[in-house]
Length: 170
Image (tube, rainbow, N blue to C red):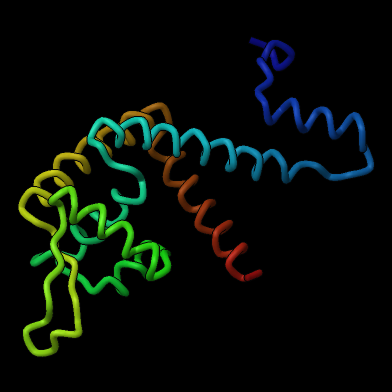
């Protein structure tokens, strides 16, 4: 297949249109940021389509994975969970309410200070997140099989550099 026969994707078309309309501008950043936006959208759909099979949303999944990653006894203060998931205290409260209602999380008080509350995975929550995370990682690995391991390593490094460049401008 020659370069002329390569099918243009949505980002290629946007770049081509801007190059036609504003040849004086460097529109090459669209090739990176446009693709990142598309990948983000496609990844969100990919993950949500999987989570809905387990009656979870991405927000609930984030809280469950945060608790699971914390290690035994899979228990954190809501403020720590909010930091891990980049939520407000109100946002984490709502998610914990939902997870508690589903039986995946329970709230417990600290033995020394009853004002301190913890969120902890129930046995059912632990079983669920262990099952879901296995499927999630397996599906992600399948997608990445289409990319050479060396390219994956390079991509991860380049994304890390981009992330740092953006963070330095915050």
